[in-house]
Amino acid sequence: MKKSNYPSVLLIYTGGTIGMIENPETGALEAFDFDQLIENVPELKRFNCHINSYQFSSPIDSSDMEPALWAKLVKIITENYDLYDGFVILHGTDTMAYTASALSFMLENLSKPVILTGSQLPIGMLRTDGKENLITSVEIAAAKHPDGTPIVPEVCIFFENHLLRGNRTTKINAENFNAFRSYNYPILATAGIHIKYEYDKIHKADPALPLKPHYVYDTNVIVLTLFPGIQENLIRNVLQTPGLRAVVLKTYGSGNAPQKPWFIQALKEATERGIVIVNISQCPTGMVEMGRYETGLHLLDAGVVSGYDSTVESILTKLMFMLGHGKSAEEIRQLMDVPIAGEITKA
Ligand code: ASP
Image (cartoon, rainbow, N blue to C red; front, top):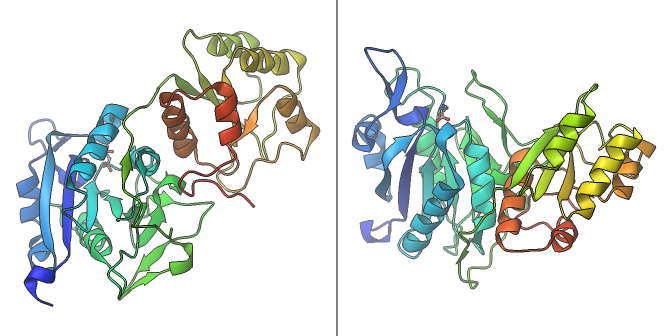
């Protein structure tokens, strides 16, 4: 292939372990410069691909990631959209699944790959997982079908040999290289000697539709996890928080919750005040079915809506996205049924 025909990838460095180095005085890992990071991966120069980079002026640990920075990523991708064939975002693993979920909603009509990756060990360390993750992510971001269209036109996380749909992914391991899992949607590709794509599972984009970036969000949302013995005053206090607009209720099993009258009443009063309450399960695998047990039916009566098989990261960012667009509680309740970017399984 002629060099001028090489695909081009924009590498966006936000921070995270992949680019960290040990502070010799404190022993803590701190973010370091992108050029130093790239020096540790000379292999990138051997790619049949043009790679340019953009780095956050102060790289962050992803625990400091914020919706305003999701909007910044959307802006960077939008401004560079026509110049590149794909995008790789280097990101800390801790909140990577939130960023991937948010971007999947904020980049409407995306028809190019946006691949998030990072590592569990800094790239300068001998046994780092960062090199493989970075190199394969670039390869996926540049990969095209024979007709020139991108193979993976969606927001994904690539980690430890697996390509996963971003808004289906959860961090599950703080130690092992195998840190992410997509419980309710199949793997999109596996990297071995070759990268094996599961073409029928990958989103089909329409490149004729122009990218529509979204920058608005509303963070007046909370996650409430049920547990046996949860107290009425605590639940009532949460639901009466001034400004609260939506609650992700993490229930048991297939979407079940206590039947105590005070509990159902507290939820009912909140939904009547215009708070959207979405039911997702504490079980990472499977789907909320509120009609299955009586304990779930009470929730339906209280106006709670199903989050189907959403991850917590996906449902939370989807609510922020919808609330930010000024949708009413009733509209949002109805729209919970409709996948925006393949984030729920609907028969
Ligand atoms: N604390 C780091 C972060 O999320 C962990 C990592 O990158 O793996 O930024």
